[in-house]
Length: 253
Image 1 (cartoon, rainbow, N blue to C red):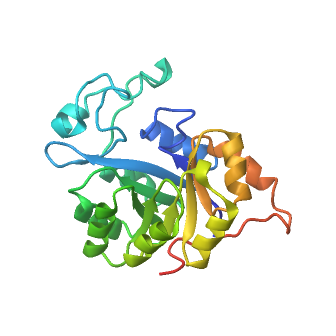
Image 2 (cartoon, rainbow, N blue to C red):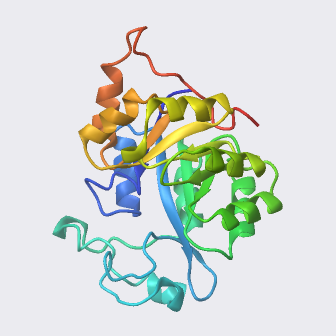
Image 3 (cartoon, rainbow, N blue to C red):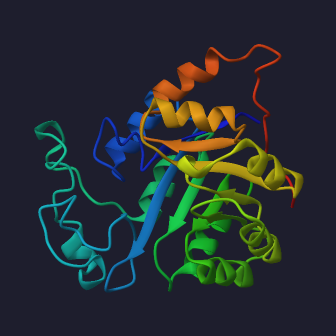
């Protein structure tokens, strides 16, 4: 399977993050995966949204969890990015899956808060996404809850860096992936994680310098705002001595 070129909140360098526009742009630009964030509304609807509050990326204010879905879906989630995207809306996780689950994409689904782990697992089962989706979180308790609900789902631990404690924690819940911040990567630690049967997916790729650093450390994938640039870089680096290891999600399961 190919190196994971995951569009961070969609192709968020080119369209407003976590919207249909950003996700379709990611596919257009050649990403082979999408990373997205989930939260829940006051009435329990799982929505694709990163921040705890709506202030930065909509024309509303206040906490996501204080909005009902009917209230949240009326907000403009695109005008802040550019006039071209005025009127873009917040979407539900179910809507995202309806449009993208049948496409040949890796999915990295980050749970930003507790409380809806079981519903997410049930949706992954409904859409037959076990082979192509990894549930991730910085909150280890969320990952423990996910594993308790579903022994089959792929799990990735978002961390600031790779160390033995983090490796032990993800292995303890039979996880498949560790996701360190790109700035902290070094090649030996990436190799050490792989020796434990984990795939390594870097996050926080803000520019080409960090993208290159992650590639040199031999990660298995990364989340990136500009998947077109990563795709072009990978295309230029397919000589036998430089070819990156191709991995399958859940390879140690």
